[in-house]
Image 1: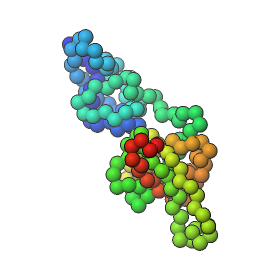
Image 2 (image 1 turned 90 degrees about the vertical axis):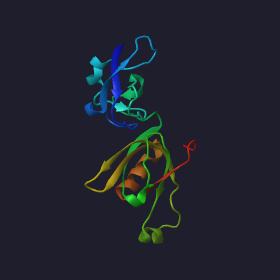
Image 3 (image 1 turned 90 degrees about the horizontal axis):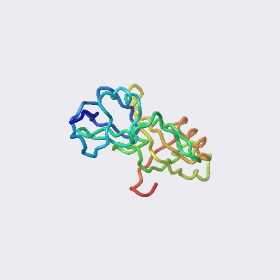
Length: 167
């Protein structure tokens, strides 16, 4: 038997791994399972999980990253969303979404045509309980990043969850 790092609490994709998320697990030597040796547990604390890991699972080192970086041609944009600006269910890393400009009544009177929605992929989410908002980090095409960031800072961005495979 060999001791490896297991998961005590669910770790959502994009989340930073905390010490309290981890537990020591015994697996049979030669089982073919790929895990992090328990004596290296501290080396994964502070890293981000690239995938959702359920309680009772082994922590796979291939599913970890020091930080999340957008791919070439993409940009990482943070959205601060109120309850009316997002679906009522949890957004997970990898979810395909569309970011829609949602003007107020005065904005609609000044504009004839609303800007086109922007396709994005959720990288991570976190709650901002003091402000009652959800921070959603998304990757967008880099030529739309400034527009999407502007919508967000003006509280005029809403997120629509798309069906799987439409990202």
